[in-house]
Length: 311
Picture 1 (spheres, rainbow, N blue to C red):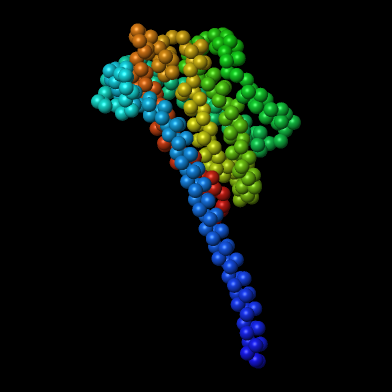
Picture 2 (picture 1 turned 135 degrees about the vertical axis):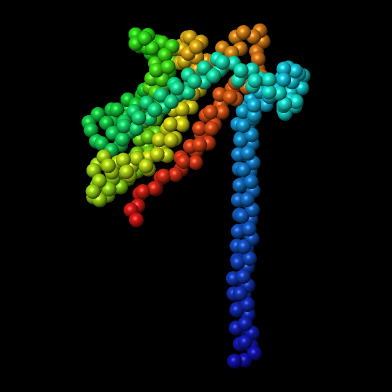
């Protein structure tokens, strides 16, 4: 091959190499730029989420902060974002009040009964709507949805007259049944979604292994349904523990007051609003719910696949 031919062969090869190399370098730059865009976008989303978290937490922090402040700090010209000096007089006044502990007992019993009745009733209804096919199934599902859409205030008169006929005014049992009735529709919807998410083939496999239909449900489906039961129970607990208007209608006697009613009546004897005492009482009312949630929140995501596969 002559020198001219060698140059002719080398030149196109160099051109091809350059043509191939340039897009590679250009692609690397574009990938780096896209990575930077994703990083900036993720940072902005995180900052926005942190700001939302601060906005959400601030009222709770201000409640706790106010509960530890003295009267001079509360009514001063400059708001105090930190309780200095630290003051426990508001909590001492609440804890030393026997009516607070009486209201705590009433709320605890009412909530326990309401949550138990709501979960048991909603559990049976959710299983029936999810696992069985019958003529009125669709009508029952729509009825549950319609009942949930009715405002609670629209039922106050009929509910009061019903409890009055039963002799359950100022009664823990009467208020518990009303709370359970209000929680059952939404609890049915929540549990039905969990039951629908558990394949019925798991129960059929258990029956092949020798379990009865009821035994397969209790040994396979029920453990997998535990997270849904916990989540639904937490919702029913919050709805019953914090409810105020229905308790105001039914529980007229101060001795039968729930915690929200007690907090409303706590400041009646004062000429001015005792913000320190109210915030201390609100903080103490929130503590039991927080403790319960911390206990069960770790179990809400467990058991989803436990027992699903036979080893």
